[in-house]
Image (cartoon, rainbow, N blue to C red; front, side):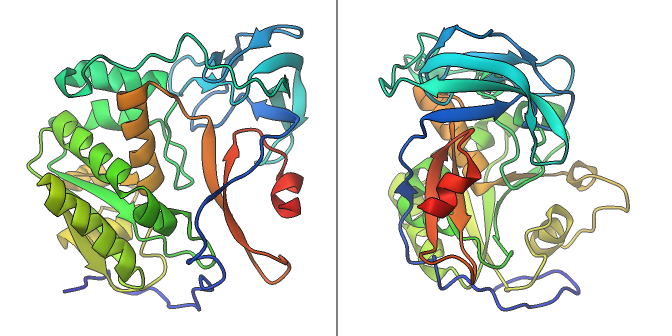
Length: 313
């Protein structure tokens, strides 16, 4: 039976423009601009300077305290390290890379010999080095959420609600990358020491629910898909926790206060890719949609791609 939290609204989901469009790989741009802050916490310190040659997956920004490292999304030459306009307003120090289109992978990208033999500590270290943060928008460093939740969390929830109008990137990931999602869930179950992981998905994505359940059955994975009523903001952490567990996160509190940890669908995919291939976060799926867009699409783009190129596509 589909579950829901108390309250909320039900706007037109506007997803028909893109929910049947497969994720397309956007052509790599001639130049990427990678801000040194893509996470909750203080900005990173650049590790490269103008004229340096960099490769895909190479660490170009290091954090101190709360944060996550940042990596090159293309190979090429550093054109500048300077303040550039920032999505959150103002300007921030950014690494500008001229793409050489050789797609050279950094020697730093190393796949573990046997991912399933890794200890919990080793997996957390991989997640940290991969620069994984909450891809639902909160950008909280994932390694901090995991390490801080061990021993405190008994319910691991994957946020597949995707309740916001227009966006369909998570839905398409369920249809096209269910093995990555379920694989990431299995690693999270191991790290937290829980018997099962719960994926919450709104019931307007029935084919996504079916695709996940098929892989769960094939792999006998410790994962359960929980259908949710369509309701905004079902994808909010606190609302999602209430819908799935029946418990309310206290005002001003975090999901960990009621024993929950919540991870986005594409964050879960990133965990799987990092642990199995060693590749850090260098791409992101973005939905470009709306009444002003001639041909709405789901695009996988290199981090640092100018937004103008997304609209051109």
